[in-house]
Figure 1 (cartoon, rainbow, N blue to C red):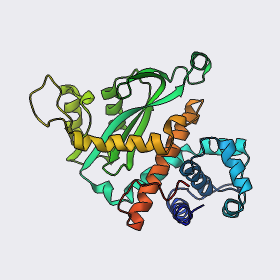
Figure 2 (figure 1 turned 180 degrees about the vertical axis):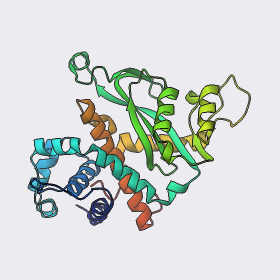
Figure 3 (figure 1 turned 120 degrees about the horizontal axis):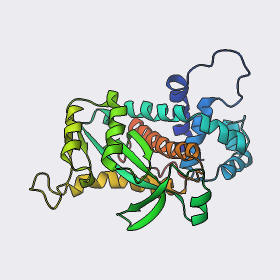
Figure 4 (figure 1 turned 90 degrees about the vertical axis):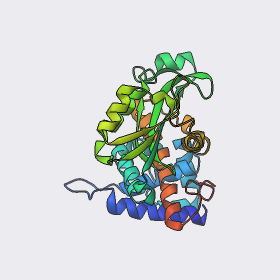
Length: 296
């Protein structure tokens, strides 16, 4: 473990314990591993690139430094069950970290949808517990078909997640994003600029965003008159965020086999990215989405 990672996990634990995890009330035995420690462990697992929970637990037990930080470690099955049950806390922690960063007050938010593959064989498709939730979709950027879900993400310019959801890839992108924005209407500010790709074109969707107080900004389609151009330089930001999720945080290797499992593992990766951005803001690092100091 590097000194930078130790500092990040310590700061994250304090923030979560003070502002995210509610105090336990009522009867019952208190768990030896607290929810604050559990969420901190979940972030450390992703930053250390352990896609397998079983390998991650073995690594904790075999490493004296990790054991000293988390002496009350769970078994693999206990860790898995506790983590799935804590998915509301993962989402709450992401939003808490977002509000603690200066980029929360930026006028520009960026949105995009990216595939989350959940199976590669026909047998997996037929037998998976994700049947009815996942489906076949086409990824135009990689010119390939996949079976799984689609991640819709709204983030700030530095990549800090603001709101997100998983949806069936057969659903219309505009309908899903509209539902996501309506569900999180309390986070929207009047005059907020939302940068999207040309797939979110349409008069009805534009009117919907205007009623929410948003200013929709997107590249021009070929059959339209010139308005904004291709916006390639700005659109590259969201592509780099997706690259961080897939390249450094192994989004496509999430290993989820159930709806709750996939949701939890995606939330883990978004929380890990949010934690790194928040800590880099706190320490004054120039590259806000850099994970180099924490992933080895």
